Image (cartoon, rainbow, N blue to C red):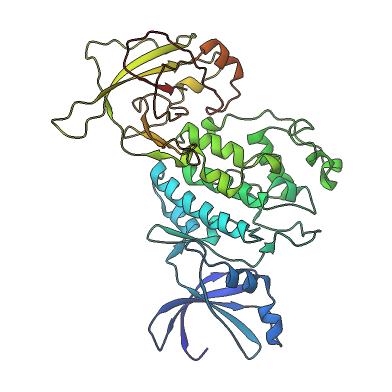
Length: 430
């Protein structure tokens, strides 16, 4: 350790203290983690799960372990230095993050997590304090509780900070999976929108109560395996109906709400993997859209109508002043009686389009298709590269299938023989 000079303490954890330091030979700023327990053999050090995980996991979104050294029975980990952690960023924030910023953070977290899971480890202690940040770059840190996916149960039931602890861990499952990391990701995503924890329990019992107040009470139809866990058999669940997440997170888009609902599912088997989460429409939003050509004399139709309606929009795809490239879109504006989903419109400052990548493995070429202006809710937008015939949505067939997720509708082809219209692009409105 004579090559490093400690400057100040920047963290105090269960297993060790973290200091900012610099290398006296290179003047490089580093982070030094000094383990609290004593070590008497080098083999003990290199067999630590944290060491094994970080030696194997080399990724731009996972903190880099530069060196491991032992001196006078004290073990030191030398890490790259990061400016702060995500908890600090959230705590110092005075106004909510933009969805663009949130998307940037979450993409990096999920990319690091996908790499970790694919290489045989899950973290078990994801929380904002363990996500380090420098100039918008996020890296997953603190692998003290990491475990191999292939390791044999039983696993300990005391992992992760309580607010981000998955229900199967709270209910003492001894064979949980990397899905516990995905639960934590969902809680972190919600916190980035609200700047406060989604499930701030004060004890394990209160933690389960806080989850029930948001997700509603689980039962055998929602989570059959969970009802047979050791603590479930003796635990009296609070009988509470689920809340509408858009009431709790009013500044989140419908895509974000849907992703949070999937990640924070009672049943771990229903949570998407990190790779699947990265394919969610929440991450497929870009910032350029062709401007619709509006009729200034158009009177806005009453939004309180209970019947779905179709909209035909004329779009200008021109990118240069001298270009003239017009196109039409035919779309369905449904209404859902008894809910306020149709009126839930996140505030956006610019129009958006979706990048749909569901056709990468086919000869079809993926692309960008227009959505509606940002003053209306937005749903799923499929890409069809060539329209030899018009496609429409059968509103009577689509509406009964609605399940609360804006991404559950299917296209209903309708051939229009001998039509003379230009090709029509379809957009769903929700």
